Amino acid sequence: MFFEINPYHIDTRLIKETAVALSKGKLAIIPTDSVYAVVCDLHHKKALKALSKFKGEKLHQMNLSIICKDISEISEYTKQISRSNFKILKHNLPGPFTFILKAGQIVPKMFDSNKKEIGVRITDNPIVQDIVNELGNPIACSSLHNEDEPILDYYVDPYAIFEKFENDISIIIDGGQGQIEPSTVIDCLEEKPYTIRQGAGKLKL
Image 1: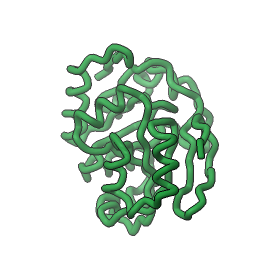
Image 2: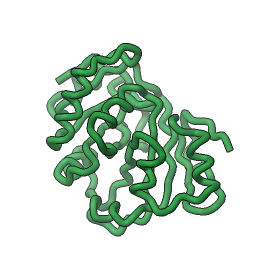
Image 3: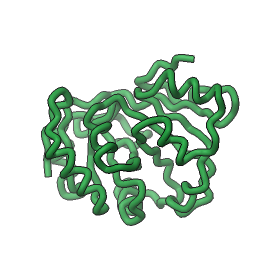
Image 4: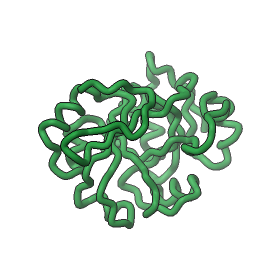
């Protein structure tokens, strides 16, 4: 299915349909405040495995990030966030960032691994915010493109994305032209954060 959703005038019916599909284990390609991403319900194990298969990786080896509705929800999936890191998250989210934090106990079970860290996001895209709110829990996400390849038309143009992936993905959302810069990745595992990858976001300390 191909949904056209205006981020400034959102069709709630399409948001609900997307959330229902995700809750049933389907994959979706959605816009974010950086690049287009492929996502699934974080709490659906078969969906996580389907996402890893789509990306050509094993689930326990993937560096998936999760998109949450707010910082309070992030804390459910991480170890206690230090005061300094909480301040940085508060100053920069929602926004085009992925923050690497120490994973909470629930995370390794989800990914069939001994994962000790997790990338977390709160996107500034209203379509994504509405999907996460309607679903009722975070979504797992991965950039549609692989990090070692250039961002071509079929990663930024919704119609080109649909032509390339319509047989692999249940729902593809056209939320406008995609960005060419991925999210900025910030390592917050230690007291002093540092930038792993500079992307669309400019960090405010």
